[in-house]
Image 1 (tube, rainbow, N blue to C red):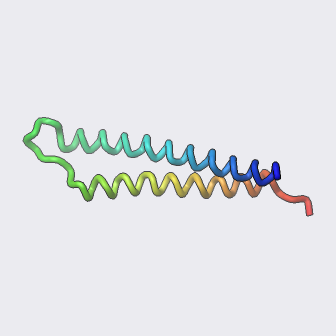
Image 2 (cartoon, rainbow, N blue to C red):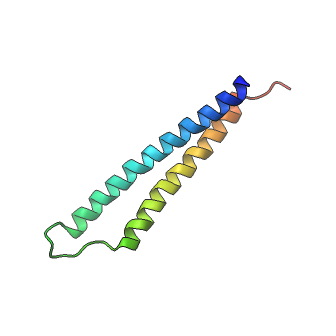
Image 3 (tube, rainbow, N blue to C red):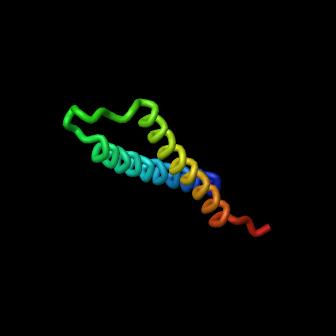
Length: 82
């Protein structure tokens, strides 16, 4: 029981850290796009599709990376001695 709880909590923690890293990545990329397109109202704005691709890409890559790292860590930390 405690072993399963430890594995699942480690997986959840790594996923949350991955999503937090994805959030930081998305905000930094948004800042770069703001610097490229400017905020003077004259040079246009990035398209919604570009912003959606950026959001899904950053959260998806870092989220799945967090899940993968969590699975690897939990399998290494809770190896059975069978």
